[in-house]
Length: 621
Image (cartoon, helix red, strand yellow):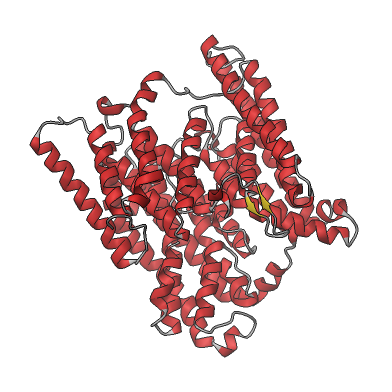
């Protein structure tokens, strides 16, 4: 989104300078997205999903500054290595990247889903079930191959589910609701102490994680070369492989710095190689690279084999600027780390409405569509319910991201297979296909063995076993039963169609979803299904006023009153409802009004004046 918003600023710049601006934004946002991932458990970009798993846990322990320092140092190391690969190995790697066909890209997408299914969930079944939910959500809208509209139950879904709307909805909205659970009497759990940490100590710690640096750099480079894969797969695969090879694998997810190093090294090492297929073959290696392609075309530069001869000065200036950009990103990032870590001191009753407003304008800015905002809010509310029963947003979001990659390459591969040796031979034979399938099976098998071992340890400690409190068993069965009904409904709408051709991939997902939901339901009846605390009476009472304000803001006020006026009123309403200060004290209301007006003015200056984002005007602004 940042690169797309900056493209209009390049119209009056020389081509080299315009591309330098876009390249610097690309470099910085991949690393900068880790800031909110670490501080708020809200990834700033899909590439930072894996970073949130351990980075947020470090911040909760008061190590926010350390986590951010490790993040930016790792990002710089991975980024510099990735750009060096771009500089020295572009001609060699371009032909290698061209060798990836639809079957390989399909199995890469499935590998990403199997890996994330076990990363942030203590139940493999729940993780894979979450991934299947995300894959099915990704099929909503128009089928890119057949051009058929699918599962459009309302006009708001005509364009499908936008990836950014899903990312913000699944991560940001549940965090906002959780902040409001305790009501006015809740203590501010985010006002944690932030330990001071030496930058040199962080650098030594990162350089001491050679295993994570090596895995992250290699993974990021290889996956960056694969057209369409992107940094989200690189970070997750590197994190997963580092965890499996680490002697401290049991501590991953609890604040293990090695996980942050692996994820951030990989997603920044991806940046340089992702430009190899773009600059040499006109094939973007990531979604952001696709936006960069638009920037090149706007300036009359057509990527391809002749780029480095016809436009050598522009091309090499752009590439070298990215190397300098990595160094500047490190310097600026380390400075920002000290300031950004103070976010944990912001009270929840200010942080929650602030995140809500930024989530709304961030979602709207992508396609200038209020439909995306409504979808974002509904997905977020649904994710909050799932989160209360032990489900993680990470597998679902990755399913949404990887769904188009998996379906497009499955359909293309099937068409190729029908003209050749058949579906079985195309997808299940060949060295690279067999390697990727083996990795998928190993990933699932390893996760299953790990879960069994964990259950045995908890049983030995007297905290596990198949039995549990009656209320908890009923709660497990109820949540699993509702998911089974959802799976049955998905299967019904996927199979109850006249033309089955565009629904082949959704049907595969529906069958997998139904099998996993049935297994989860059986495990719940046995008391073996891990679940969260559910939504208690106190939590429901706490979030009710805030949810009401959020719903009015999203569904009615933003368009009727105008975005900035509605945002100010929503911010003030949530602030006042959850601020433990007196409602009658003039000083308290003066503080509330000052903070609200200051936040709204800053919002207007950045989005309306600087970035020139057009928002609904309504009655006023």
